[in-house]
Image 1 (cartoon, rainbow, N blue to C red):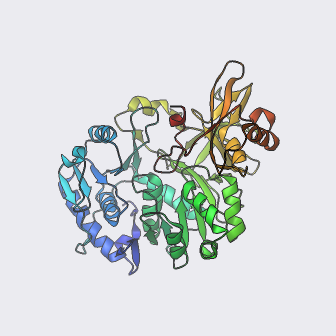
Image 2: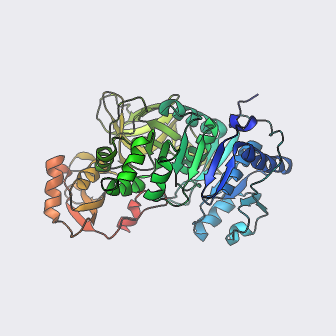
Image 3: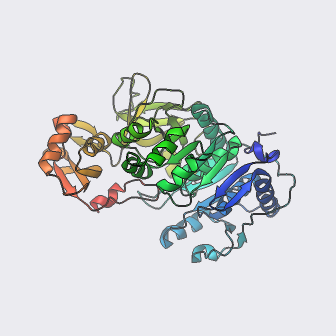
Length: 477
């Protein structure tokens, strides 16, 4: 018999499992509500279900119930556009949609049979644990290169990632996590909701991020915080002048940033004010988590740590050679139980991204002599080949952010008849726009002359997705 994905639901402890604002469920209540829905789903045996993934207790119950039932769940972004939603519904063909009572659904989902998620239920035996290879979630990628693809994540991927993070972060049932992440993506849903539930700990979801709410929860019983760089950037900007926030962050056991790189200067400002060091990790929809800085390991700002237990990671050069030399750029390839099984209905694309069992991530990185991985960017958008050099956009962005006149920065390449590609800096100024030559000289002084921007463009804001990642293709568009 397979190990339960959520052992704490089989003999639920009398403590709060999930809290969203004024609404909360303890473990017996979650077992009852999710158990009732799971038994209904197991009886009707849908091939898969859509979940209207608002940041709510109802979404959490819906996903847990689907997992208990062994029915694959398709989390749907509630801010999704019509065309993208139509594609996801036609591609995943859910038999019904699980949603919070009273919430209006867009036409593509409203046309499906609907089951409202209740927060009450009757105690009872939970369905038998499905096989670890059973699909658990189908999470659609952001679709930067065509329509979104549905990554099929098996139960073993969720269990192995969460157990590896428990090892790396010393994560236990005593931990209470605070976050304000959306629940249609692996960061907020798998790590932020399913992670604490697998450990038997607690979640305090803020609904909407604010530094006041973070300070309140970390100043009470929360021990960990998960966030994206935009959240930590706001914290870094306030924490030096906010003693309450600094004290709350300083007492946290673990602060984790993910989904994009956290600029080094934000690390430094938070540490200076709180004494705490933010931990970064690296993962993808298709792989869940691959690496992390360990709770008991050295903190190296700007790195995403070392491979997690069970995950094999290598760097590969353009000719397919495995790179052993430290501080040499290569594409990250990974294999392990954390991987997805396929892109739904796309065997052609699935075959393209695997090489002998290794998943080609498309992310470029270096590794130092201690094995710490440093992401330099995406192969498609962040590796710039200029004047015979291979240059990662990330280190230039970090350098630019050290200039007092720069609030936000993104770096891309564009065709150049002489250099092949020239480096373009997209800058949100921190006040009056700084001189372009001054910015170029600043980067050349910190890094190397060939890494200086040749073009500087000023913007009011950088285009970002819901997880805070900069949409670099939108910059050139």
